[in-house]
Image 1 (cartoon, helix red, strand yellow):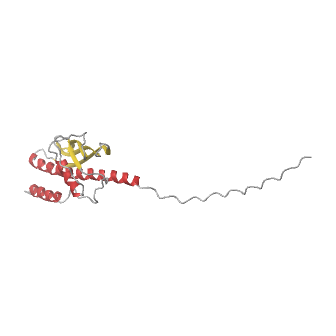
Image 2 (cartoon, helix red, strand yellow):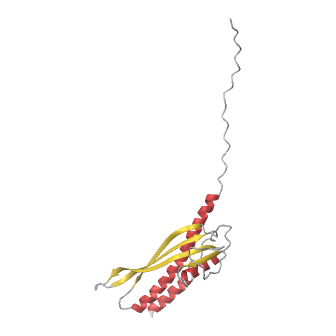
Image 3 (cartoon, rainbow, N blue to C red):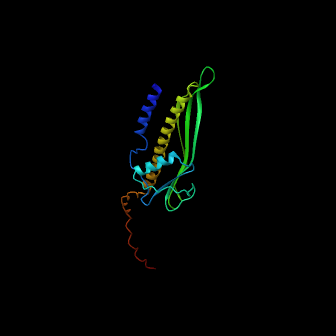
Amino acid sequence: MTRFLLALVLTATLAGCGFHMRNKLMLPADTAAVQVVSSAPYSELAKLLRRGLQASGAQVAEPDSAAEPGSTGKVAQLQVMSERWGDLPIAIDAQGRSQEYSLRYAVIFKFLREDGSELVPQQVIELSRDYVSPPTDATGTTTEREILADELRREMSASIMRRIDSVVRAEMEGRVPAKPAAPATAPVEPPVPPPAAPTQGH
C-alpha cells in the first residue's frame, strides 16, 4: 500500500512538470511550421515535442506518414533519429544479485530548415535516473521504472527544446550588426614646404 501511494504521489508530481519552458522558444522568423519526425512509430517523445512546440508558440505541422528522417518538404523538421534505453547495474546484494540500476536514455536528433539545411546539427542528449530493484519485488520495480521512464521522456523533451532555443539564439545574436566605431581622427599631415626658388646659373 505504501509503495502504491508513493507511486500515485510521484505521478501527480510529474504531471505538474514537464514541457513548461522558462522562455518562449525562439525560432527563425521565416520558419512557417515545424514537423516532428521520429524513427520510432508511435513515439511518446515525438508527442511530447509536438506539445512543447505548440505550448511555446511555434506552429506545428501535422505528421506525415510518408515523411522519414532525412527528407523535408516545405516545413522545418525536428528529426528524432534514434531513441535508446538501457539498464546498468550499479549495486548488488550479498548473493551477487543486482538490486540497484541506472536507467539510461539517449536520443539523437537534429533540426532542419525548410530547405533541408541544418539549423541544429545532429547531436545526442543522454539522461539517467537510478532506481532500486529488489530481486523479490519485480512488480514494484516495474512500476517505479515506468514512472522514471515517463519522467525521462518529459525531461528529454524539455532538454531538446532548450538545445534548439540556445542554438537559434546564438545564431541570431551573431547576426546582430556591431555598433559602428567612432570615426577616427584624421592624422595631422606636416605642412608642405613652399617650392624652392629657381637657382640662376653662372
